[in-house]
Amino acid sequence: MPLPQFPRHMHYKLDGRRAVPCESIAEWGAWFSVADRRVVETWVDDVRISTVFLGLDHNHGLSGDPLLFETMVFVDGVTHQMRRYFIWEEAEAGHAEMTELIRAEMQEAQVRAAQAWEQVRARMKA
Image 1 (spheres, rainbow, N blue to C red):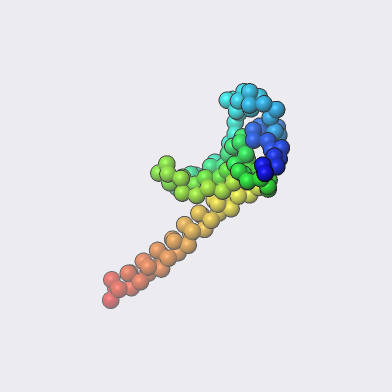
Image 2 (tube, rainbow, N blue to C red):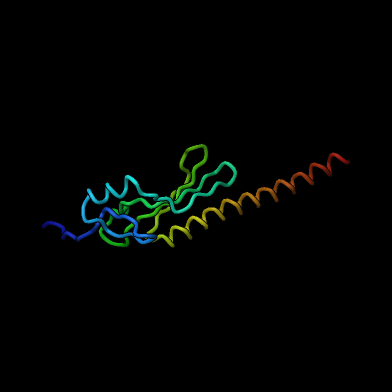
């Protein structure tokens, strides 16, 4: 028995910050070729956090919201983390969260390094 077919759009474009389905691949291709799909990009030292509108639904299941936005973390050009989202606002929030996680970890590492330095300095004085 064949599986039921669900109407699901695969190709989307942005209308402002809102994703809307495209009626055809030609419509999507024309939009995609000139679109500014960047939501936000942040550099924290040599780490790049990039969030973009994908234009294609990356939810390959039969249920759930489309996954249309993606945040990726790059170190030396290599992808180290990826998260996907349904709407622009989720993508912005996810980007901010990822950026804050990286900054918090950097701050924590600096605290640990400072504590280690105090111990080294104390031994050097003795």
